[in-house]
Length: 114
Length: 114
Image (cartoon, rainbow over all chains, first blue to last red; front, side, top):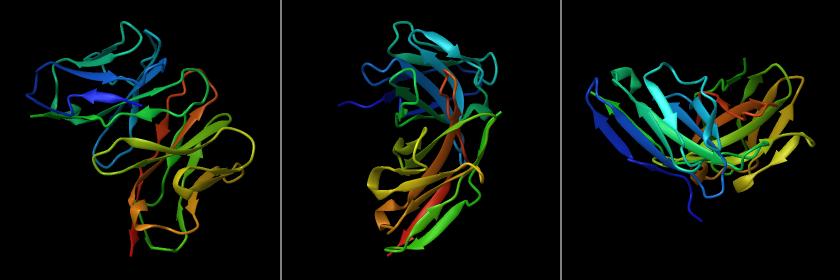
C-alpha cells in the first residue's frame, strides 16, 4: 500500500519568506509526527498529533513554526519568516495511534533558506 | 529527559563478517527502543523494536538487537554483513507515555566492503 508522502521534495526559499510543507500519512494512521533532521544529525522531534489535535508541540523551536491537521489526516507544517538556520530535512511519520507501534517515515522535504 | 548515544560515527566491516552498531540510552523510566535504517535519498525504515519481554529482538533483513538494562545498551547486530547493508543507522528511544515521540541518536554509518 501507499506509504507516507511529503510534498514538495525540495523547497528553496529566501530568508524572511513563508513556507508550507505537506504530509500525507498512511491511511488509517491516527498519530502523526513531524521531525527535523539537520545535516549529520539524527531527527529531532517537533510536534505530534493524535487525530486533529496537537497532543505535544514541545519540540517546535519557536513561534515561527506551526502545524495543523484539520481533518485528522493530511498535515501541514508552516514556517513564518524563515531563517537560514531553518534549513534542514523535515520528516513526517505516522503510526497506528496509541501504543508503541513503529512510526513509518516519509522521504522528507529538504528546505533550503538562502 | 531522555537521550541516546551512538558512539561510533562510522563502522567498517568486511562482507560476511559479523557487525555490531552500538547504542546506549538514558531515560527516567522503562525505555522502549527502536532501530531505523536510512538509505540515500530514502526515508527512515523501521528495523526492530524492544518493548518488553525477551531481551533479544529479531527484526528485518536478518538484524537483531539485545536489550541490556544494566548497561543501558541496545546494540544492533547481524551475524553476516552484506554490501547492501551499507547505510545510516539510527537508534531511538521513547518512554511509557502517551506521546511516543522518538529521541534519536546521531546515527552511525555502516560501510560493508566486498
